[in-house]
Length: 249
Image (cartoon, rainbow, N blue to C red; front, side, top):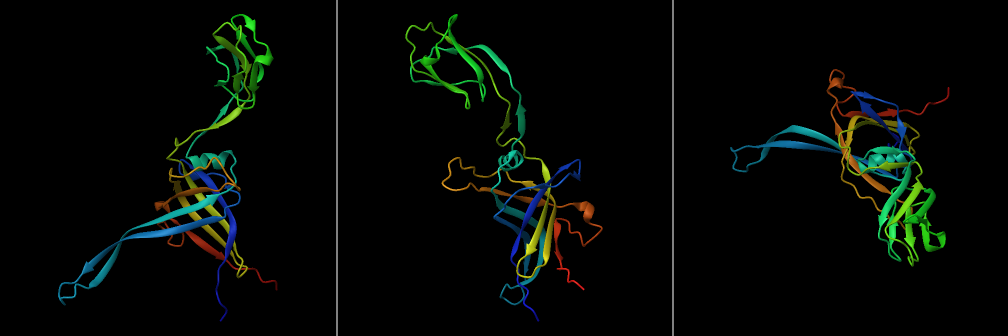
C-alpha cells in the first residue's frame, strides 16, 4: 500500500459577500503560511459510582474553525483587508491661499495633499522666492530655509494629486468566502478548500520598517452557513476536496 503523504502549495482567493451572495474571486498573491484550527467546547461527565471520578461521557457543545496566515502582496485590496479598513479615492483639488501661520526656519510643514503641482507661497501679497524654501512635492511638505524679510503669516497655493486613502480599523463586518486551489506535491493530487463565510479579526501588526520583504499577519474565524445544512457533504463551515490526478488512458 502506497504511503499517503501531503505537502501543499497553492493559491488563496477571497470573494466579498454582499447580501448573502459571494462575488468574484480575488487572488491574494503569494501566501507563505496559512493554517486552519478546529476548536471545540467539550462537556465532560464524571461518574460518581467507582470512587475514581472517571470521565464516562463527553459531548461536543460547540465547534469553531479559525484561520491564520501571512500575506506578502500589498495591493490596495489586500491593504484594506489587512487593516480592516476602507479604501477612499481622493480626487485632485486646488487649494488657494491656505494660511500656514507664522513659519520659522527649519520647520517642516505638512500641506493638505500629495503629489503637489504648481505650488507657490506668499508672504502677504508677495510671492516667496523658491530659494527660501524646500518643497517635497511627493509627500506634500515644505521647509522654510530663510524667513528674513517675510511678512507673516505665510499662505500656500497648490494643486494636489489623486491618491487612495486606506483607513485603519473601520470595517469589522465584511464577510468573505475563502477558496484555496492547491496541489499536493507529494502525490500530484489537487486539493481545494472552501470556507463559506469568514470574518477577519481586526487584530494585527503592521510593520512600517523592513530589512527584508514585508509579511503581514492575518487571522479570523469561519462562520457557519446554515443554508448548507440540508447537504451533509457541503459542511456548515466548508470542506476540503481531494481531486485525484488524472491518469492518461
